[in-house]
Each structure stands twice: as structure tokens, then as C-alpha cells.
Image 1 (tube, one colour):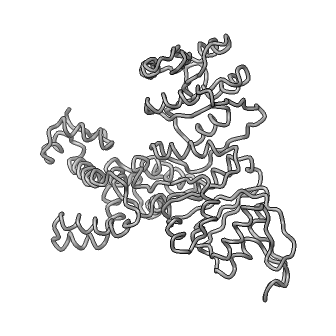
Image 2 (cartoon, one colour; image 1 turned 135 degrees about the vertical axis):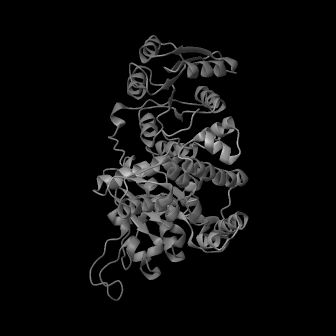
Length: 482
């Protein structure tokens, strides 16, 4: 039961106010809606309302800028921030300034109702945020994407900004695990101190303990001077242990002691040293499977798996590809390389590609395009040439049928992902990856004439329109006579 709580809703979009009002009213709440920040502030100043739901962008004031004033006037008033401009920066600012929750638009109304109920439950103690608790936020990290899975990651990072909890970042190679780790450090209270990254897979097994914990002079043959390890270098900051699944068992035992007791001993040393370091680990491997195989300590797994953060492969957030491409194109242009753009059909081809190398593969491709191709506008022929598997190209040239080509590509996919198949949706994804480039390339071949493209495809013109919207296929100025 709501207990007839009053909810204050502020958003300049009447449609949003209406659906939120209806959803909350059905749950028995009293809803007051406003289209601007001034009206909302007037209610808050008068002591009206038990919870606030506010948009960020409003005609008279930014909703985020209001948060400190609201928290100062009414410290325990829960605030839910919603925004269509959904970035990591927005999520962090909302959380840092005292928001109870941050919701990217579009959001699920059932999720909103659930958050409201949780915020108003008697067990929740809304803690005031001190104005002095703020920090300067500099969003220089390539966190690009408004897909739902990326929004979840933004919210997790935002919630961890005020904690020292150990995090385990899980994801395929090239997904950006170190970028997430750097963001956790940048937006933490340790940001003024060092971020030290070490790749466990790149260190010889016999040198791992010395690399991490340091060694004293004379500790072993060749140790002619004292060496400070990564823990000492990261004092007061963050130590990022990438590919922790490759850490030898002996080093795992010593790392466990650091996590349990907060101290370590250099190799050859007799005195323990305190370790004021936050640990963030990452892996592309299944640590639970390694535990079952006796290759990873179970107690260490539970120590580092306090907050698991799963980074999705790029193929699971293909809607973010255009924004990533634009970001990387701007980055290479800023470095002095030739400025390029990608036309609609080429972008559709990039979106439909499965990207086995993930974001790193996409970035490398964009850099290659900037260096190797003289045209200012990159077309689909160039992208096809860069992305086509040479074996697939030979198969088509030899007269291999489309069905056989698709079958071979699917065999490669299942072979590469036999241990990481999606839990659902593979059928729809495969159809989308075939359908999208088919329509985009047909449009390109008909020079953007949608009426002609519909005839070539054998589709009704309205069906083609629907497909263009559903598959988010860009349509150039040369569109047909509609």
C-alpha cells in the first residue's frame, strides 16, 4: 500500500508526465505534475511531497543543478532522476548529488513503480549528501552508448563512486574492461592517487610475486636493488589486475592475504607493509570453471567477486555502433589524421557485423579507414572489402551458394562462441544480421530510391518503411518518390 504518499513529477514532456501520472495513480499515489523546475521547487519549499521524480533538461533549470538545493532544504526527500541524455556522466552526477536512483529514458514503468515503492518503504533511510562531498567530474573516457546494457553499467559505476568495494569486470577481449576500471577509479574518492594496471597474462610466472609485491635487495639471484611492486606504486589509489584468471596459485594465496588482512610482504622481506589500495580485477575467462578445475582459489574468487560487472560484447549492443564510429572518427581527426565520414549503407554494414574483436576491432578499423583511404566519405564497398572474410570471398567467387556461405559463417560463430552462447534471441539476431545489410545494400544499389528498392526486394512500400524504422537504417537525401 502506498499510504497515499504524494509524488512530485517534473518533466517538460507532457506525454511523459501523463504516463507516469497514470502508472503511479493506479498504485494509489497522489501525483502532482509540473512542466518546469520553478513549480517543482515551490512545492518542495512548501514542504509538499514525499518523493520527487524529475527530468534533467527542463526549460528553466537543469534538474541536476537543483539536486544540491533540494537536499539542503529537505535532506531525506528521495529523488529519482530521469534523462533522455543518458551517459555515464549523467548517472555519476545524479548519484553524487544525492539522487536515490537514476533512470535513463525510455524506461519501464513497472521498474519506475518498483523504485518508488522501494524508496518510500519504511526500511529506507535516505541519507543527506554533504555539499562538500562533491568532486570534479571530467568525462574523458570513451564510454559511448545508450543501449540498455550500457545504461546498466553506467548505473553500477555511479553507485560505486563512494565505496571501496572490490569489483570483478567480466567480458570478452576488446570490450573495454580497462576503460570500466579507469572509470571506477576516476569517479572514486581515490582519483587523486594513482591508477596502476597490470596484465597478469603478460608476466612470467616466476616474476609475478615480485611484480606485485616488490622485492628486497638480494632476495634472489639478480635482485641487485630493492624493487617496489605494483601494490606500493598504487598506494592510496587503485590496482587493476587484468586477466586475473592467469594468476599462478602461489600469487593467488598472497593476494588473498592482502584482501583479508590489508597487508603484504615483499619477496625476501621480513616486515609486512600496509596496503591502502582498492582492487579491481578483470577476466575474459570463467573463473567458476577454473575453481572447479583447481586452477583458481575458491576463497579468492569470492573475495574479488564482491561486485561483478559484466561488459557485453559489441554484437549484443549493435545499436551503439554508429555512436562509437562517430566518436572514433572524431578522435582520429583530432590526432591530425584525415577527417572522414561514413555513408548510410556503410554504417548499416558496420552495425550488422558481429565484431568478434569487439570495440577494439571497431576502433582499429576506423583508424585504418582514416589512414589508407583517400575518399572523404567511406562507402559500403570499402567496408565490405575490409570486413569480408577472404575464405568467404573465395567461396562466393567459386560459385558457392548463399545458403552454404551462411552455413559456414554460422559454423564459425558456433565454434568461436561454444562456451558463451547467448541465453536467448539468436534466431532473431541472425535474421536481423541478414536482413539489415540486404535492405541497406539494395538501397545503395538503387541510389536511395526506396520505391525501386521495394520492388527489387519484393516488399510492399509500407513494409519497407517499417523495416527501415525497425532496423534503424539511415536513409539519405536521395530517397525515392514517397
